[in-house]
Image 1 (spheres, rainbow, N blue to C red):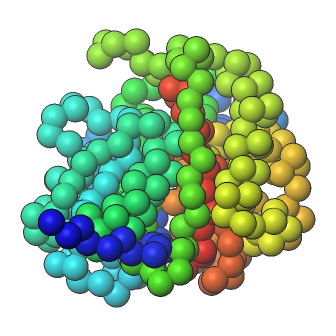
Image 2: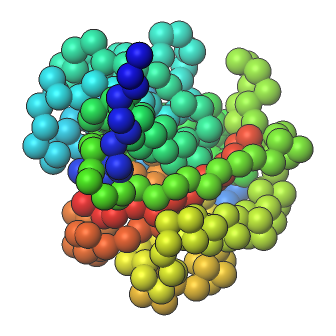
Image 3: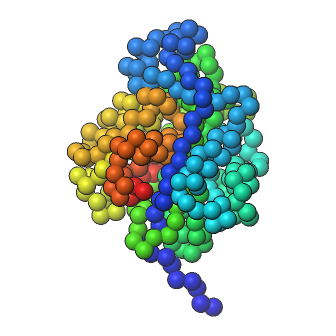
Length: 318
């Protein structure tokens, strides 16, 4: 038996993002719980966030973002043969989201699976898509990060209700003669698994904010730098740094430690909140739309969150 030769590389051809129309401001939250606009801006950097309606599911969000990415790519739905959805907020675990997203987008009989690495999920899924293409297991892949965190939040809990939000982001990944997605550096800190968790189906999302803050601001910048090293990229060459949009203070602390003087740092959290697996593709899609990052430039992606899981890779901006 002769095995198929591997394909040299993969690249992101297009991004797409989607946010629900319902905007929730800090003042609206302050009318319900003991907080204020100033407190929220100072602690987490958020001004407003988007919350999906009761009849809008995480699959609905994914379809919107995936459709935008597919349209921007110029590919037909029939040319996609693998769909990967990163999410940790499905209301029910069966059936998976990927098969439903593919069906609604008119993608016929693709491979379809979900990834749950929480806020690092998009980076995990992007790495899986790249590896599937390079091994010959897939040709063109749709990768979606989608979350409806609002259905898992106690809206009277100040520690979570001011942070988390809903949204989706997607990318179309295709073969490339030269690599446009660098090697992933990933891992986990399972000893801290209970720092962010939903205990059971009757519970809400809870997190130990100080534990997560200390871990993120001390343990993750070496991961990002290793991803640059494995891609053969000096941080000074980066055009963008797009970390998970967890907390503005975390984002700024990691960015300082990486030392990428020419990189535009994504700060989508200010108007989007923390959308977990959706945050990186959503932020980058909006940066591309606004013309803040150059096509062909290099972006460092860094996802991290519940598990605790983390992943980083350098990509070429489409």
